[in-house]
Image (cartoon, rainbow, N blue to C red; front, side, top):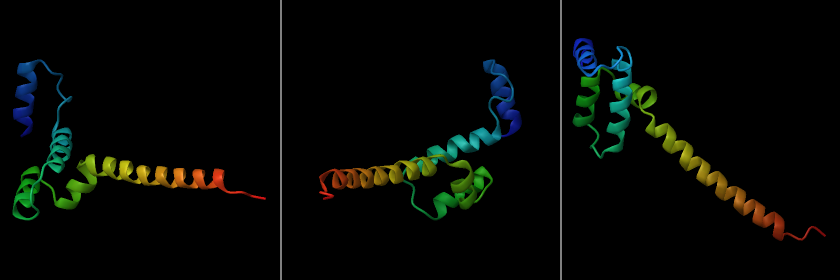
Length: 95
């Protein structure tokens, strides 16, 4: 959506100008797009072209989901390490 279209919609809906902007739209839609099952290749590159960026910009700048998923996955593994380590520490006879 161009600036004029966003401005018009915000004006009609009584939303403060600037609350919705192109960067926030790209961020929102890139994150949502990452949640759907779209084959790599032409479909993805068409989306990125429409959004005005490349796949690396989409993944590293606009998407929140991959970062959140990475944190959740890594933290789950670290918690497993902690639980194994703690159970081993408590059961080990140090004498």
